[in-house]
Image (spheres, rainbow, N blue to C red):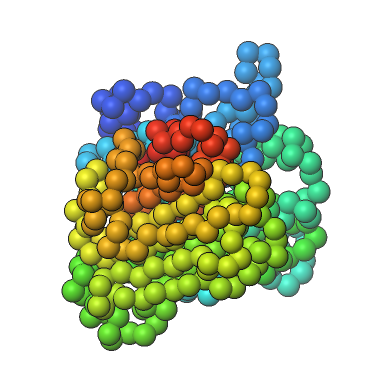
Length: 461
């Protein structure tokens, strides 16, 4: 133990040096013996007196609720479990990640992980999971079962276990935010967060492969805490949870993807193309729902549009596929999307993988019959056909945006390019961005606010 204390002191010094060298402060390091790791916690300078920002969205956040300068406030912090064997370069990588702590990322699936030997892919959850068995600590009953799932949050591993549904907990928003904060005040390892109507016990891990045998101990510790909390707040030992991790294009496509090996995979494995098309159609449908809600489209027309999406698969011939809303019923908006496997050489976009191309057409007219909005064929897109007068708009990093205004009408078009895999973990941000854009394009028939529309896609930067 003395050897561990000495090495831990040295390790803590290295961690703090890494933070100070990157002009970061407000950090603490906690030993979690006997696990071969420490918890590094970064506290934000932001204090929240309102609960409105504390619920939902960011699974990386640990919210505490305590008295600061005589007033109860929510304290925003981020903590990561790191093994005791990281190099200086790896420590610096972890520290750099704290700069982006406030950026919301949705979890993406884990489909393989050598250190997670007892985990298996669960189709219902769409990620790695396992069931851990525990003795009931508060009463003599048969053994209890606790689900643990693994997901990715950027470069970190998210290990979490469900405790109770928000409905079963029976708390209103402010009461819930206070309860989460007070529970997190007590936690030395892990934290409570709400997501998709479930209360979870969470733990973020960097370089999990370096935990070795400590990985199994961490799983046991997290699941045991979650199970005990579950017994305190509900009588149900629930085993089935209404949750599913979003699909990940990066996971589907695999590593080291080139156009040639992509075509080879298409030829060799039928399910490969099916999985890609399913991913593409899923996000396309979600976008139709979002745009329809903002434009006030009727539910019947939206249902017809969703059931008649036009699909063109030309991966082997041309290197892309496309989805398009049907010509009827005619709505005041239309979208078309390409998943392009070609090397597009698009300015401001640096990627070796596929590119998504989205086209939105909107009629800003508020009365009369909606006009038919013609969508662009691939060979007339801005990166292909330079003769069509698309307007090049100053675009955020990792995007390229063009617009077009139909003279004499209130019809306008916007085309967005971005690396396809940047949608991983950003579905909600992506849909929210389009909701803002369609609002701008629809509501101002005299002034097409192109630059403002482009800025709405800053989530890709």
